[in-house]
Image 1 (cartoon, rainbow, N blue to C red):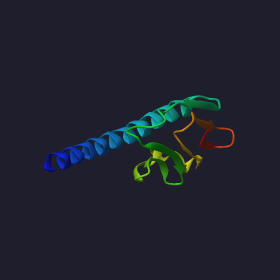
Image 2: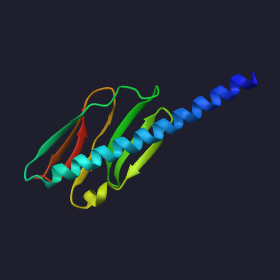
Image 3: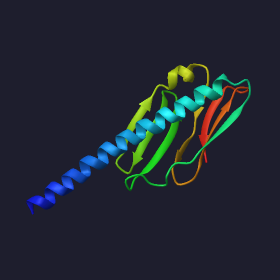
Length: 117
């Protein structure tokens, strides 16, 4: 019984660590691509395909007033990035879960960045 509990604890620790790294990696990837798209003189769409589940958990990507938020579901652990203060010049909106491909739209004409499926 002790060995079983130890293995469950190690699995939980590994999964938690993996999901934390995944949230940060997804956040950094999205930030870098939006910064690149922002430097372009045109409106653009980034198509992002996340694995449906990572470590048996879904990933939720949302853009809010305070920045980019990546959440692993169902636990609700999250990563928040201020999105390099883009929220001061752009309206950030939208929220999606990793069950379908994700589109990140940078619309310079109307000054918004949106995430949707």
